[in-house]
Length: 431
Image (cartoon, rainbow, N blue to C red; front, side, top):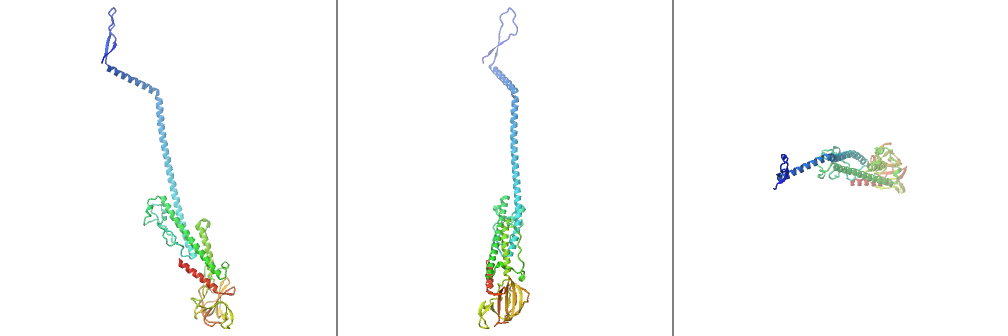
């Protein structure tokens, strides 16, 4: 490197009058100069930075604090949002829990209602005399123990099992076999929904049973009205005798509010039919629908004009003559009260029974009488024995039916009774 020349001050002043001053030159290397320049630059930069810091330090600190505050606000906002979300989730869980508890309470109430309705159906079936409506019952089985106990009595059956339509089994919570595997992973809400559907099926089956009972009762009412009308009597004008032949009192219907629901409305309709049916039954029990002799006796003479067996001339025959063996049992054709049991001229030994509503029956030519005046008798009860007393040509029963004292053809009642009996047999056979 070539040296640089720098002036060097003299070490001592020259004395006056001496020669010109001598200049000394110091040689410095280029590397040293470069290092000095770098040091100078760093010192300059440091000085400038320090000066800038002292001038702008307040603005920098403010910005830093503002950024920190913004970050803190953002974190607080996120925390608040998370808390709000957690509160919302917790509230939703509480709502769902309240909903499940409400549904469980509803299921318990429906269970009680089902049991009450089942008792009503059994009572109505007994009153109507029905053996069973169409087989549409649903069997209810228990659910696994992981559901709340209040719902455990309502597990849906795998398949509706048609058994006794009035045998509704609501069992406990113990379970011998698991539910359908498809239910295994279902939530409590899904299982409760399945239980609710099962209970709905039971309620629907009860409504169908109720409708079947109503149809059967209405059909019986129609048949009995037709049978009574066939005799020439108006069924609406007849009064059932009280306690005739050991009969009970009138049917007292259950108290229900038909506006409470379809089941209650159906019960109200059915009870209207049952009250009418009960009245017609008690009325028909006092109508002479049965035959006066057990078996199929020979009818030797009908009602109306005939040639008298003694005078050989035309005469009015006021009843029916049944030929039978001497001593054959004669029975009451309907419930009633004995108003005569005596020897009555041409009738011979005669029993007369009052059935109410102006209807009486007479049983004549008896060889023996087994009842007394004032005695109440039931349909089919023995009144005496076939004989040939009075104006008779041989052992037979003379049987009469009278309305308000006037003789009418007994066949009206016998044909109506045969029709009712055939209908009853058909109903039993169809069960």
